[in-house]
Amino acid sequence: MISVDILEQLRQSRLLKSAPKSVVSKVAEIVETTSINAGQTLFEKGEHGTAMYIITQGRVRVHDTDLILCHLGSNDVFGEMAALAEHEVRSASITAVEDTTLLRLERDALFDLISREPEVAKALIHGLCEREKNIINDVTRRAYKVRTLERELEIGRKIQAGFLPETLPQVPGWDIAARLLAAREVAGDFYDAFEIPDHGAIALFVGDVCGKGVGAALFMTLFRSLIRATLISADIVRWVKSDDRNPDDLLKNSPLKSHQLLSNAVSLTNTYIARNHSRDSMFASLFLALLDPDTGALLYINCGHEAPAIFNKSGIRQRLEPTGPVVGMFPDATYGIDTAKLHPDDSLIVFTDGVTEAANSDSEQFSERRLLTLLTQVDEPAGGLVSEVMVCLTDFTRGAAQFDDITLLVVRNTHNGVQDKEGWGL
Amino acid sequence: MSSTLEIAVTEEKGVSVLRLKGPVDANTQKDLEEKADELIRGGAKNMVLDLKEVSYMGSAGLRALHIIAGMFGGDDQSARFAHVKLLNPSDEVRRVLKTLGFDNYIDVFDDLDEAIGAF
Image (cartoon, rainbow over all chains, first blue to last red; front, side):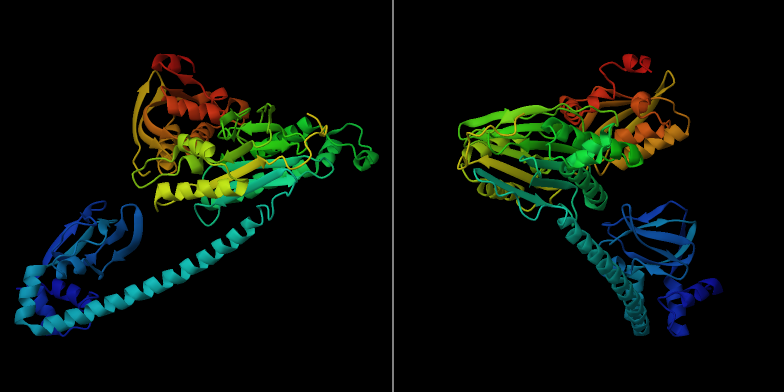
C-alpha cells in the first residue's frame, strides 16, 4: 500500500507536476524515502551515482567545494543526470543546510519501470525539459550579470591605462622602455618616467601594490598619483613646509635639492597612506630614482622592492638593494637614499616579482637567476631587451595562467648625447 | 600555487601558538586571518606564529601579519606588532621579511620559550 503522502509529494514535485495520476502511482511504487541531517553531504562532485532525488522537505546547497551554485528546497529535483546517463558522474556536490527528507529514485528500478510503462518515460522527459528551461533562464540571467561586470571592469581598465605614462621621455643619449602586463583586467603594479619640470632630472619609478585585481588597482592609482604629484609640485611642497610662507618663494625658480625631492615624495606618500588607510593594511614596494641625463648619475630610494640591476655586456655591475621598508605600512619609517651611476652602454632594469615568480604548469618559477642570466646575454636597445624578456617569460610559462602583474622598466645609456656637462649635481 | 594551509593551535604559558604548515599566500591568507580572529575574539592576548613548516610566504602573507596584528586593537601604530611574534622562519621567508622591511618591526625568534618570554 503506497502512502498518500508519497503520492502527494511526487505529484507536487517539479518532475511529475504535469504527469497523469497513473504515472505518479507507478513511480510511487519504486520510490524510497531517505533523509540527511543539516551539514551532511549527500554526494560529492565527481562521484558516480545511480539515484536521483526529490526534496520533500528541507533545504540543500548545490556547490563545487566552497563555490555555492544554488539552493534547492521542497519539490525540487536533483541528481537526474548521473542517475539517468550511465557513465556520468555527479556534476556538483549536495550538502544539507537544514534537516532534509528526500524521495530517492534508483536508476535500475526506474529504467525497469520505463520499459514496462512507456507513459513514465514521457512524463519524465517532460519534467526534465521543464528543468532544462529553468536552468537556461538562470544561465541567461547570470550571463547578463557577468556582462555588466565585465563592462565595468573594462571601464576600470581604460581609466587605469590613463594612470600609466602615454609616452616615455625622449632624451638624447638615453633609451627608455617599459612594459606592464596585468594579471587581471586591472593591475596593482605601476610605473612612471618623466622629466621633472624646472629641474632637469628624469624621474623613474616602479611600484607593486600588494595583491592584484580591483583592490590593488584602487590603491595603485593612489600610490602613483601621490608620488607623481609630490615630485612634480616640489616647489609647492617646499613652500608649504617652510615656516616663512612668503608667496614670492613659490615664484622663485630655485630647484629643490634632489635628495629632498625624493625624500619628500616617499615620506609624504608613506605617511599619508599609513595614517589614512591603516585599516586596509595595504602597502606597495617601490623603487624611485632621479637620473641626471647629463652625467648618468642615479639617486634612488628602494622601498622594499626587488633590487634593480645595473648591467652591461660584461655582466651585472650593481644591485640597488632596499634602503627602507615598503610604503604605506609603517608611518614612522625612514628611508635612506643611495647613489649609482649609469656609464655609457650600461642599462638599468627595474622589475616586479611578477617577473621572477612567473610559474609554468610544473609550478617552477622563472626566478631571478634566469632573468639576470638573460640580461648579460642580450645586447639590445631598451625596447629590444624588454621584448626579449617578455618572449622568454612567455616561452617559460608556456601558457600557464599569469598569477601576478608583470612590470619591466629598462633605461639604457646610449651615450649619443653630451656627457661632459656638470649636471644638476648630487 | 594552490595548496592548503594547516594551522595547529596550542596554548603555552598564556600565549597562543599557531603552528603553520603549507603556503601563506593570497589563497590561504584568509584562513590564517579567520583563525587568528577566532582566537582573539576568544580572548587571546599574545600570539606566536611558528613558521618552521611554512613552504612559502610572500607579500600577501606579510599583509596578513599586519592585519592580524591590528586585530589586537590599540591605536599605537609604532607598537602594532607588539602582540605577534614569529618563530623559525625559513631562509627564504627571512629574506622576504628583510627585503620588505618587516624585520625592523616584527620580532623573529629561533626558540619558542624565548619568543613567549619576550611578551
